[in-house]
Length: 215
Image (cartoon, rainbow, N blue to C red; front, side):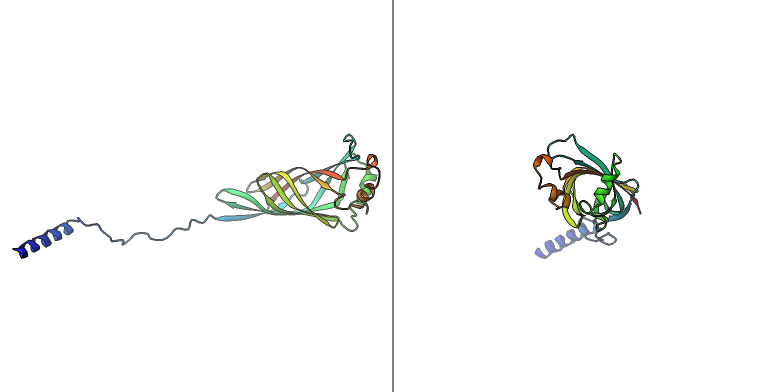
């Protein structure tokens, strides 16, 4: 009797299996390849348009009287900018700018001041014909980098708006200060020895517009 029961159970199990009652584990034809989800990063290089780019400056003739000042400009002689694009988001990753110090001019056309700026008391262009800025980082509000001028280096951080397109980069740098006394510019070192009422403000206001086009 037991033998008949066992044979009956075995036959019932085989019937269920033949009717597809069991779960199939056949993976023939299934795509088991792992997909690479790493974002594609594209690097783009741009050349600075020196004709469209400009640095503007404002220097006060007194420590306390803001009504006395000179304004002027400074041109770029070269520059390169690098961006990276990933998943539709573009980021400025590197930048090097070169400034032509002989191009520093007073907006009012005071040629004697222009000549003075070229002298050893100020920019000493005979020894330092160019200055450079090297981009280091951008936090979404401020751009930071290193300025090399009159043989000295100083860290610069300024509010900046960066607009990147496939064909161009536009950088608008809001006002920041350069303290030329702290950089030991000869004119301001001597000027600091005078009475405060006669001293010039060594902190110069600077803004900039940088335009670059795709290489």
